[in-house]
Length: 193
Image 1 (cartoon, rainbow, N blue to C red):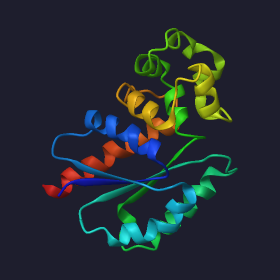
Image 2 (image 1 turned 180 degrees about the horizontal axis):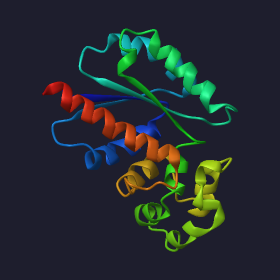
Image 3 (image 1 turned 135 degrees about the vertical axis):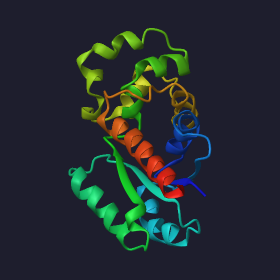
């Protein structure tokens, strides 16, 4: 069975992907969203979850926030090392949200405006702060302030995920996630042929 398995740091990432993936994936590609209770729980259970997964055709995407970790390359390597402890390491990809998942949303203020019914956000996209949101230190705080408290992690992520522009490149980490999902789906389709 053609399947993508997402191993996620938190419920908000699951909520966002629940509304984003049906717009991104072709029919016939299944997906499973496994969320953990934070980054420590993800890292603690990652090897076991991948090893125990029964579908031998599945591809795995680990998605975690970079948060305040100073070196994203070192963090990604640590997660890849955990994947290497399974027999399925060649079918695993790691993607980091720089700095937080909310960076994806700040890169698409039109989606935020539409999803949360907060007028005037889209025109702020051209301000210096929101042209390169991956550089922001505290994206979740910025998003709450920008939406005047309307953004709530899980419900907001679900609502915004329905409207995110799949081709948006203002957040390289979002762009890389979408590209990875598309690439893995193509690999799955080729393997079926």
